[in-house]
Amino acid sequence: MKLYNRSPIDDKVLKAVLAKAARSVGARQSKVLVEIGHGDHLRGHANNYIWKLIGKRKIKCEDWVRIILPTWRIQYSPHQYWRCWYKGDPINLAQVIYDLARHEFAHIRDYQHGGEQTMPWSRQGKSGRRPRWAERPEEQRAMAACEDADALGRGHEWAADEILDLAIALEGLSARDV
Image 1 (tube, rainbow, N blue to C red):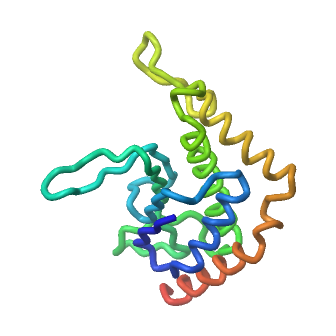
Image 2 (cartoon, one colour):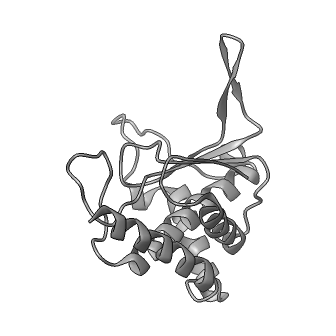
């Protein structure tokens, strides 16, 4: 797994949480690019390709997959371009980060098992719109994978050490930002 981290959280802490999230849903970590802080919204997304820059040309490389996750901050500062999710509760925020990473790694697992060629995927209908988020087959598979991981005991309790390490790192950030 390759990590591009634009957040102030330590790379070792994030890699431990991301690795545990990948293992919980059964995704392989090889040839996965995780970008943190590159999205402009509060949710993550996954792609089944990355763009490589070779010379002056961008080449689409389809043997790698990519996850983009937002940047997290406990305290909100109007002078910075950070998003605020849960003020003052770093453990809850760490659990949300773990759940979001686990959901996106479930999409990565789908891509690693053949993606759109072997599984049902949402398409535009006659109206030109895709189905709602919760009604898309790929989202239903990801939600089911997370529920199955919880049923197998791979939830928050299974990753408690990594989640607590992330919460301590987030608490340190919020103490500095006050």
